[in-house]
Image 1 (cartoon, rainbow, N blue to C red):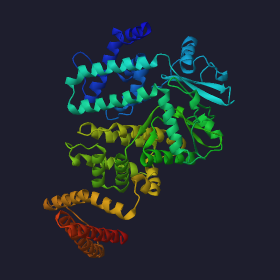
Image 2: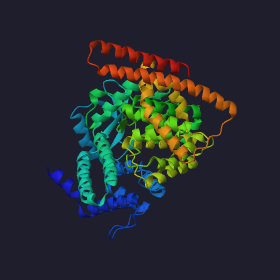
Image 3: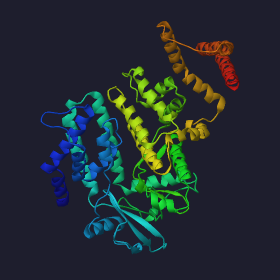
Length: 529
């Protein structure tokens, strides 16, 4: 109890509390695009980074989340935040012995244990060791002493300050900042529990172990030796993926390496919906055989199927320059709110289309286009759900890695061919006929919206269509056939719904026949495309 009281006093020290206040005021002012609040101006990028380093573990992790929010900060602040590395001095011997005792008690499981850690971060540190029973070399990840209490105290302080600031925020600002804090709280509470990381690693191995096994590898956990304070897993040899000189000495194809990385993340984010959300270079190794080894499963995100489908449609819309489909997809993703005017999306859409159009897009151009998109979003009632933020963070990290190895690397464009090969699995489609019918019905509001937009342009005299005479005749012929087929389908659907409401028992059976006819006609129409 005495140790806990000392921790509380240290974390709540007046000087530290003031630094937290200045940090939050800076975030508030930057988000609201304001130069001053009462007596305080925002900290400079350098001062903000120095303050975060002083505040310690919790705020380093919060900075990692904030560094994904390009809708909050301009490029100078983002660049500064991304320079923050999650590295800290190792625990002293007394702290390490305390953690070892918490994790393993008085049992001796290791015949060898390197006291000097091979990696030391804010949450824990990793040691190389050898298991006495199995004789295997393993990596032992130890949770830092007292880190769980430190994190919980900081979360309480953050929530207290946010409650005090609440009257200053608009609803939109409050929801956005609350979204960041929820994501931060969820992530950091999972990371300070090694049992959670073990569960993530085991789930990843279960889902993805058969996915490109010749190219993708994960550590093998040893659950019998794991606890909430320690994670024991196989020791993986390799060099960091950002060590360009070392990787170049290997007989590894850079293009193939990045292709497999993009393919695997497409599988994670858009097909399976569970993905490694922290692929920074320290968590990715390259082996002599050209395999990618994923480490550190403390930060794993899950994307619901409905959101994955909307993301797929957004990628498809950007690739095909389909503005209306993009608006529909962004509404489903929660980016475009009910208060948003879809016309404000036009500039965003054009910038996104440029990303997909350019065959010679380098890293700086990609970053410039991405910031251009986010600058447009700043002044509009749009919001970025945290799931999308993590996807954007992962995408930017992969893009950064790719441009180190491959000239004009554009991982965004590489996604679409992969998606085309995996579209039925990504969309969760099992049966062609019924699923296509459902998809067509689901797209009906979008079709009607497009028709209304065309009508409005025509009424205003702004609709201009340029078409060759042969193309016009061809289009009119096929449009007439399509309209006739559509009218017949609508007729049978109307009959089916009318019969469903009839009280007679025979009408119920007849309604299913009418619905089957409509479905058959739709299926035939799709076959004839």
